[in-house]
Amino acid sequence: MSAIKVLFVTSEVAGLAKAGGLGEVSAGLPQALSQRGVDIRILMPAYQEVIAKLPAIDWSGELPGRAAIPAGRLGQALLPDGTILYLIDAPSLFNRRGTPYCSPEGADWQDNHLRFARLSLAAADIAGGRAGLDWLPDIVHANDWPGGLTPAYMRWDGIQVPTVLTIHNIAYQGNFAAGHRHLLGIPDAAFDVNGVEFHGQVSFLKAGGFYASHVTTVSPTYASEITTEPNGAGLHGLMESRAACGQLTGIVNGIDESWDPGTDPHLPHHFDPDDLNGKQANADVVRIGLCLRPSQGPLFGIVSRLVHQKGLDLVAEAANDIVGNGGQIAILGLGDPEVEHMLSRTSRRHRDDIGVLIGFNEPMARRIVAGSDFTLMPSRFEPCGLTQMQAQRYGALPIAHATGGLADTIDDGTTGFLFSTLTPEGLMAACHRAFETYHDAGHLEAMRRAAMARSFGWAGAAAEYERLYRRLLGRPSAATHPPESARDAEPDTLNIMEAAA
View (spheres, rainbow, N blue to C red):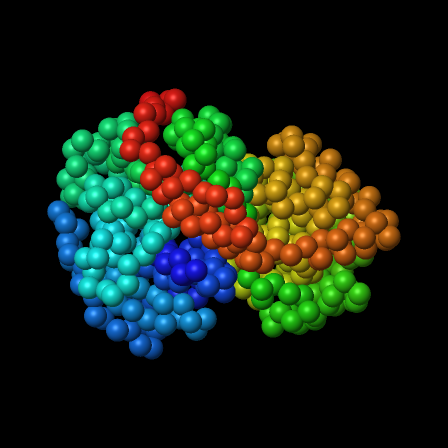
């Protein structure tokens, strides 16, 4: 059986240029798919920092321009795991300092519409044989709004290759002024509710969600949630239509194999389920690092983006109760200045028991997870989440709102604690259960063992994606039922209206 050829379109890859969880997915999932025999190749922009990190790039491909999207070169490099990486060289768009999306000062690049249209158009160029490569994909797998125009360009150009769009967070949509459509080569007829138009703007994510052969998101519960008005960010009508056609699937992400408390090089003390002395030693290191007093009580950890989505205002309101019951809180992250200031004020009220470190430091992040008895995750929504999986591997039982991937990856009362009422009282009810467990040594040990035994590697997700690819291509495998044809899986038109339009 011939290998499936997949072009994986992403704006970030961990180890090269990363801003969030998409970077981790773009590093882990292709590697796991490659191990299953999939011929997968990653396409991303040639950011300044990416070029600096790669010792050898073969610039042998050419990318035509379109409208105001500049032409460019296509380079090829080999990643350490053997994966082929294609790089889009358009210096006017990518040769600059900053993150993949923002300037060093934190403001969105004003030409992000051109930058990520160039990414999407390059994917269509490759799929259509216009990039000078001797390789053509069977499937094009785009990710989030930066890759959202990929299925659209392919449809407009008549490229008959099935496409998958993965939505990692539907709240980030890549919406731009309607006038930009002429700069991006978008046909006038496509600026329609059945196309790229979203409340009078051009929406990259809407385009991908409409034109892709199949839409996936990063957990089954989140796939269900985004079909509802409270969680669909205005795209719930489109997502409900895709789900009704069997074209919306939730597949839980994995985590990197380096999350192993027995071998993690960032930990000063290693441990395993049979010897947890190292866990307490790591907790002591965290307490010293954050200037917390010595304590025999539980340590609650938070490693997170400090933004409204994460529900950290609930933690601030519950802080008196947590400290009053003998707990301490260690917080690491950065994000919204208002949330940062709120947590810093909370820390000042409890100088000996709540420590906040604004910023991100990988060794400290892992030490907080490793040293914590519990991990606080009261997220308002969480498409998948990685921290709760990392925390379970390190025996830091998550205390989480039962939403999205948190509900899918935490077994309430067995590997962590879930709560459904998103209030300080709901959070504290779960924390009180955690305090009771902490003071019951047998129960705490049983839950830690169950949590640390969980496997969250990428193998399961890779198997599900391979089955999806085969179904879209009409290539059955021993693990699948006879699939629909690729044509049946891709409707010509979806007659949908956003409920809020």
